[in-house]
Figure (tube, rainbow over the protein chains, first blue to last red):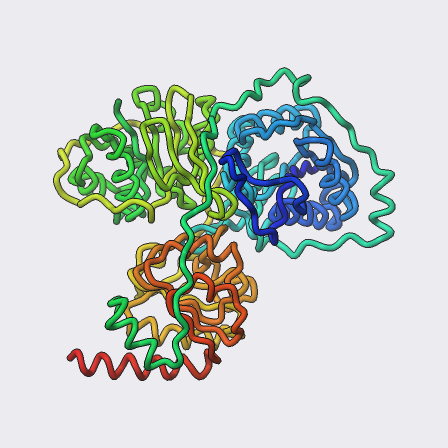
Length: 249
Length: 317
């Protein structure tokens, strides 16, 4: 069984982002980049499935500019087997991304596609669901537990009301929650080894898929700034302020 | 222009998120249809049709639709889609799960988590955990949009045209089987719509200590929330989580207890009207956005807060 894991290179989650003064977007130059956090959970889950003897190959797919290869290397250093890099210098929408993933899936024929439930840059939360619909494979979104047997998987999903369990047939698409597992760190020997693992590169424009954006980004701006309030000395003062000044209790 | 809203419900009650979504839709056009998919929910569909701004309700009533399996709901929406200028759902785990499937089947780029409607094709949405706001224009024929419920006031549950039309469903995907749901039971108000929210973080140190918040919550008729750190540590279940990957709340009063204020948490609560932060670390970033900060040990503060609220209630009575 083959597993396909898709990863995205994003601004590191610890970075306080800056909006460009001309409103054209967010400053990405000289900013620390890393793998989208729930994508790390997807890689980790694939590794655990393989270590449990239920899969024999893990393929990492990323779509992005030259530097996106670093994100593939990170996943290879964690233990994945090989990479596919679909090259483009444009920021693609989930619609185009899911078409590319589906195309790769048709060629590679994985049994499970794993990815993060959302990217922490555009926060769209669409790609997994779209990929599932395009391939006509079942989807298991917001997964916090994945149990696999021969033909099926039982997936626990995090929903607003609590938890839900569904049974999906293989092949399927899973979108992973941050609580699915604790991603491992790559060891130094594995980082060295990862440098020799193969990465296949293809131009996005060579795939015959329309990747033109459908949504125009007119403007990006800072959210309204919240003014820092006051410090109170004790609980009695706090309660008085809430009662008489803010009038919220 | 007519707009289709996909209703979120539990076969008995309409979820508030649906009323928020209808409200958002009414800022685009006044002709709004609602699709209810479920089982034994005729009464709910009737109530839905009574809601303000709703001119028609479509009801797909089938045992296979009892639970919201995305693969089953998708073809029903698709069968209606071409009659509409906009198709909308709440950006809850319900809407997020289903809508991208609809968008891709129509070959349309979805606009997720809209917080403001500028015009029928232009919307504002938060990106980077709300640290930037993007204004985007959709150039697709049909706009497929999910809206952030807390950004729109709910419509009234009366004033609709009381028209319900049944539609058939015979398209069980078969590849997904619902097993069960573990829903948290609570007597307290629902987190996403509560007027007051008290949330705890890693500072609470244990599941047992988290109960200190319940006592205060009961006195304020508040919902209890949590930071991701507290959920990851197992103090409370995932449905408590407020933040970028959890729930977004906009209460009148948000009390953050033992929460340092990572940007991912702020993404879920910084629009609250009044924010109180209680933390023993005076450098905690949560103080930068708090209206009232109290730099103290929460284990001393919470019992005092409880008794101060008692005093207040005694005076009020």
